[in-house]
Image (cartoon, rainbow, N blue to C red):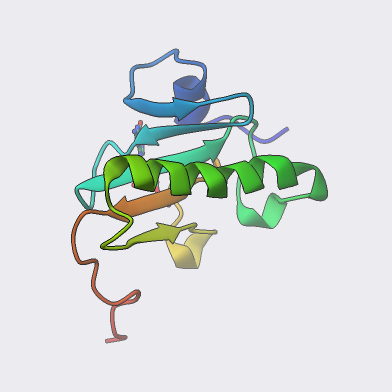
Length: 118
Ligand code: 5GP
């Protein structure tokens, strides 16, 4: 069994967080360290550690994550100017929390997707 992270406690509302959306499949809450005026994390309610662990059974939750991202972006008023969705997977991507999550970032110009290599 994969080990739970702090995100499971947030989903179960055992610790405080700013939840902006929750249903039977997914939860969305504001990032504790926002990198943009809108920075929301959208997560499946059941634990999938990384993209590398995704299975066919997860498709309903993963699809819901996308539609919820679009809905929150609309509610946040960031659709016209645009926004970015990011899923980090593993060490090279800098994944810190091993409960799959999608970052929804917007509210300012986000710049190039990747910093140039140094
Ligand atoms: P990763 O680098 O794994 O893609 O992103 C993890 C994100 O989770 C980071 O942006 C970090 O600020 C956020 N985060 C980590 N711990 C917590 C927490 O306890 N509450 C909330 N709301 N966000 C968290």
